[in-house]
Length: 78
Image (cartoon, rainbow, N blue to C red; front, top):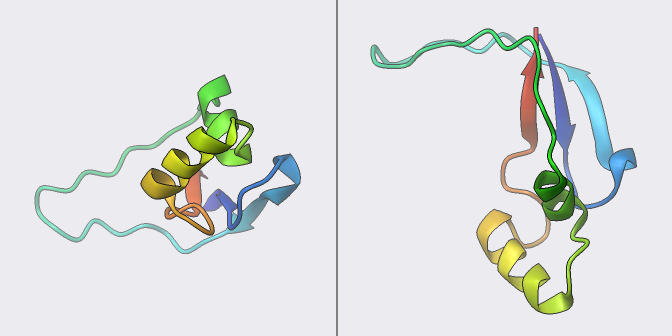
């Protein structure tokens, strides 16, 4: 499976397409969804690039990760 990951805040050059192991369904109440298309909004771009005033950047870093985004994987591509 392919995934687009981001290991640090920044522009589109920080996004990388990588091959990862298949995701396993572990718990009985988990489900696995096959995604064919996804959308990136302006809000996603503003959070991932930190293109906000400094006082909003602090809030974004507190919620989404201080040095880098907490979740490195934004989406999976099958």
